[in-house]
Amino acid sequence: MKKFKIIFQPSGRRGEIEEGKTVLDAAQALGVDIEALCGGKKVCGKCKVRIEEGYFEKDNIESGMEHLSPITEDEKKHIKPEDGPGIRLACTAEIHGDLKVFVPERSRAGKQVVRKAAKELSIKLDPAVKKYNVELSQPSLHDMTTGDMERVLRFLEEDYGLKGLSFDYTALRELQDALRKEEWKITVSVWMDREIIKIEPGYVEPSYGLAVDIGTTTVVGYLCDMNTGRVINTESMMNPQVPYGEDVMSRITYAMTNPDGLRKMQDAIIEGLNEIIERVSADLRTNGKNGSL
Image (cartoon, rainbow, N blue to C red; front, side, top):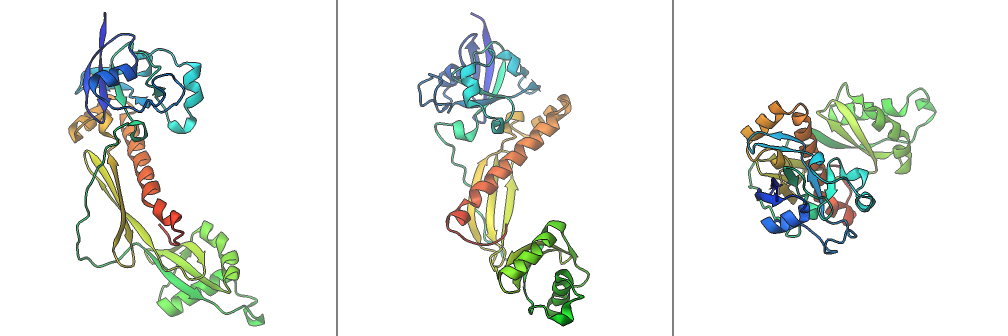
């Protein structure tokens, strides 16, 4: 029976699997935990994996969707556009060539827990985005020739010494309604003391920022209170670039030997950062806390 090389990421498990076996069979044989709640009956859709495309020089392997059996109607019911490219159900996809398979975090039966604690450092807080409270008087006949934008800019210059500010277009669109919603009190977010990028009705004190640590194997996001510097929440994951190389040199090689390699790795880390942002800010939404991130 012909055998093919298969590599699972991010676990790094690898081996040779007989032709015709499913990706789920290969995972079970190599000790890779993949969710399969329905026992491989193609009804739960939990065993989604991503097939990496291209030649991986370090592993001497050419991987691609064409090395699997054609996608079935059962699979199409579970695979959504938001899942991204290269997705197959491990319980259905039969192996007919060498493969490099990435198991997304949501498909792992034994979820990997990645911990990377934040260190306490004494630093001067000087965030790029700062909040300023603005309170205007209700317009009178004397203000007929002065617009909302001009009045806000004048207040910021007189009370905070911020001169020559510009308005982001989307923020400017919200200005009129925000002023009238909370009796002419608003909070403006200013980037680098140069541009107003956000308008919020009333006085909104909390302001949050995200510090990101992108390591070779892990990515960590620290949600911070930008007024105090305190770390509010931490979320982490395996670096989604791991399938393209377990170290930096391997990833550079992949980018050089695959025409779209750099784009794939960039898309992978952006998707990972977006997932961390979603997770790290979930508690704020759950608890109904206001503030900007």
